Amino acid sequence: MNRWAFVIAAYAVALLATLALIVWSYAAMRRAEREAEALRGRE
Amino acid sequence: MHVFANPARFLKIARPLTPWLGWGGGVLVAFALFMGLFVAPPDYLQGDSVRIIYLHVPAAWLGMAGWAGIAVASLMQIVWRHPLAAVAARAIAVPGAVFTFICLATGSLWGRPTWGTYWQWDGRMTSMLVLLFLYVGYIALGEADRERGGEGRITAIFGLVGAINLPVIHYSVLWWRTLHQGQSIGLTGSTIAAPMLWPLLVSALGFSLLFGAIVLMRMRAMLARQKVEARLRRAAA
Image (cartoon, rainbow over all chains, first blue to last red; front, side):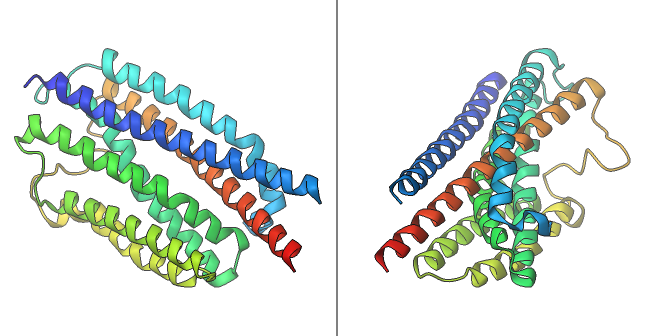
């Protein structure tokens, strides 16, 4: 198989995993901070 | 370090720092990978497969640095009982595991065209796989301890004991001369040619900044959840 096929597969795995991790961490942070803010507003 | 043990003081620094690390890391990674893919020359033996090192080496570095961070934070948690140390260690675990997985996956994809095999029970590869298992065990132990309302001391001890694998990974290429190549970058210099070396260093720096941003985001999420749980407990009392 062409070496570029392995290069493309490696870049796809690494970039998708990194992007998924960033999006997941950002969404979890936003959700948790919004909940904390909402609760502070109620107090 | 004791100055940052206060969560309020930490958040004051972490909030503006997170986007700087995230965007800075993103720009550096994009630039380094573009250079690695399209500008850096192919290797005289490996051909274009060498372009995988621009991902593989930073991922390996972050997988190991992540556990070193867990060990330092665990020590701080056990000795000085820093309130943020346990949060930091737990925040590092998932990105550390993901980058260790990326290291193993990209290494495997590099190995097939270069060595003729996706996997070999070589010292370096096996010790990196052990690191991934340690991360999975640490995450599971941390979650179980949190659900039981524990202080995380057992998890911290596991984090410290697991650090024994780091010198094994580092010296594996010297102790067992099998398939994985020896060290190419040391404190005194590098055996990699400059046109290949500098995109690699930029990539390592960019991924490190991204790793920092992810850890800060996860720490902020954990601190916010702790705040919510404390308020709910106060309201219920």
